[in-house]
Image 1 (spheres, rainbow, N blue to C red):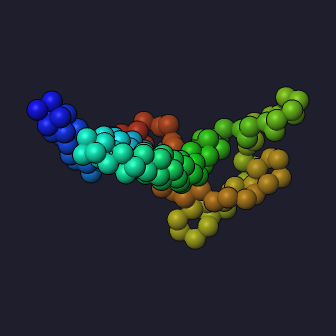
Image 2 (cartoon, rainbow, N blue to C red):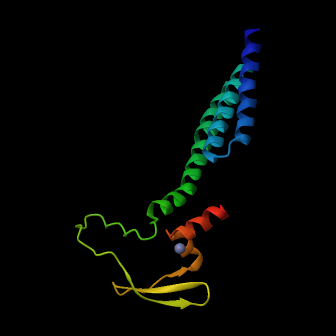
Image 3 (tube, rainbow, N blue to C red):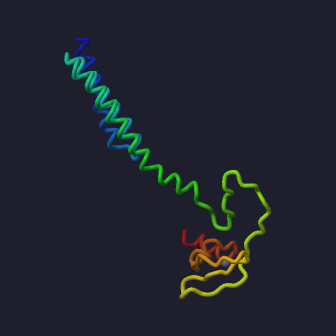
Length: 156
Ligand SMILES: [Zn+2]
């Protein structure tokens, strides 16, 4: 009788873990509930008297396969994280290289501007670089004046 109750209990955990696996939006959470499914399945095997299958289930599936899954998921997410770390906001100076001494750098100012087609302008800066184009749309988004603020509020 106690055996049956345990069997049903771990069966319920197994089904709940499987449903949670499908519902979760983040892959790490899904992988963790898959581990719960594997582990409760291993207990079910033990309750049915299959000790070897129980050991194999824990070692191979809950252990090796899930570690592989989780490492793969973390590896795939790493790219996105690194991109956001390196990203700068407009007008922000580039970060110093590790070990570089902080030295005074005047803020870059545009000294001339020319149009690029109909959709953007290109600046020549006072530090002699002229790379990068700034679309009118982007400049409207960055502009702090009242008119542009009102336009942004209207579209959002
Ligand atoms: Zn403006």
